[in-house]
Amino acid sequence: MPHLINWLKACEVCPNFCRVNRLAGEKGRCRVGAEILVSQACLHFGEEPMLVGHSGSGTIFFTACNLECVFCQNYDISQLDYGRKISPADLLRLIFALEKACALNINLVSPTHQAPQIFTVIKQAKEAGLKIPVVYNCGGYENPDFLKELEGLVDIYMPDFKYGTDERAQEFSKVANYVTWAQQAIKEMYRQVGDLKLNSAGIATGGLLVRHLVLPGLIEESKAVLDFLASAISLNTVINIMDQYQPSYKAHDYPLLRRRVFKSEVDEVREYAEKIGFRRILS
Image (cartoon, rainbow, N blue to C red; front, side):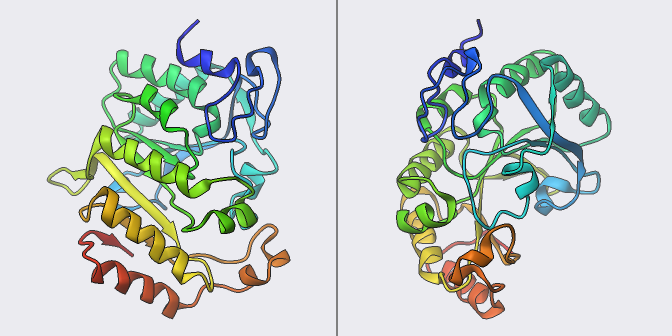
């Protein structure tokens, strides 16, 4: 049995540490056993410019999630589990079909809870000659010990860093100790791949890119995220400070989340990033 798949026996792939035997059909918080569940795959042009270029990012959206974000804009996939089961051979064919369609990378969206299954296939793809980078596009709630298993298989890590305090993470994403785990995970990601590297055409070939969605009324959360990245990672980190928050899914049940984020709030976060020395800020 491939080593990565062994992580599913008493699952500790992510910091939910459900410790269920997914190989025997048991399911934890992510609601996924040992199968591969995919919602959609396409050439996607809605990602960062250095990922999409002119031909698009080969994006695969995986069903379900290890987080329960009450404002998730893709909640039909992440929380309502829209998608279908595919075989490892199907996933391998899909990866090469995207490469053949001129995708600039293989962009794995919400792979965390299915990572043992996915990266067993990614290993096969690389051994079979996959030439484009593999992107690990995740919510930041990662077990760094598991991430060590992916060294050499991930070219670009693209985590969200959602919160500056565990209290907000517990309230809005229903997980414990988010900040500690996200910090440790991003340190491990950076150890593996370093700062984001671009080729002569401005296309990402490897490294770390961090996303942060500014939430309404929570500027101090954003500043805490930036302070960590500045002090513990690198001022050369590429940071996408995102302004597209809008109430989705269950957000209207939470007073702070009922409105869109103000432009002035996003501007303040971006100005703070510049003030503390970040040089590669996307907007």
